[in-house]
Length: 181
Image 1 (cartoon, helix red, strand yellow):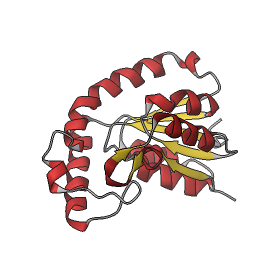
Image 2 (cartoon, helix red, strand yellow):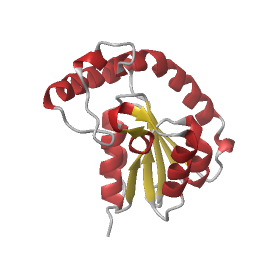
Image 3 (cartoon, helix red, strand yellow):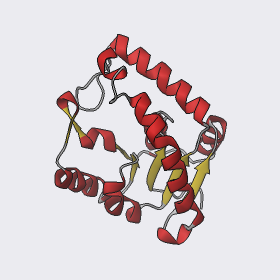
Image 4 (cartoon, one colour):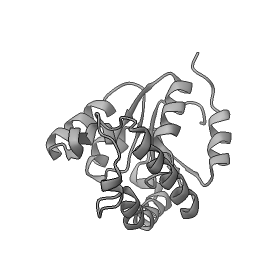
């Protein structure tokens, strides 16, 4: 069945590379790409109203062919049942930690716009709202949660469950997909 996927959800720890992987995958397949962070966050790191966020996620998932990445359980009922593949980037903590730390520090200095015009800042990085703090709060929770979902593949019976445990495994999986034609 590999290669016939046209609606793919990508999940994984904060900093695992979901967005980068998702963009590459969407380009390779020639399908739309949606990062749930872009649907959730408004300027100045304000959260979108839950009903609006849900509606936007549902609209993205209603499309014919797509890659959607993100860990938002609040919109899972709108997205996951539509998927024909759920890809879990299940990378080791040390790797995710290092990737997130280097990415965050780089973004503090280069001020690259992310999530609807937001930027990372040293003030946020050093606060309780830091994405690094979020990693420590969410990594093992997501690991347990996705582990349970992947152990019960009957939850989303239309979907293939693909667990990639290293960047090399992710690269290999991508390289085996047919390119958009």
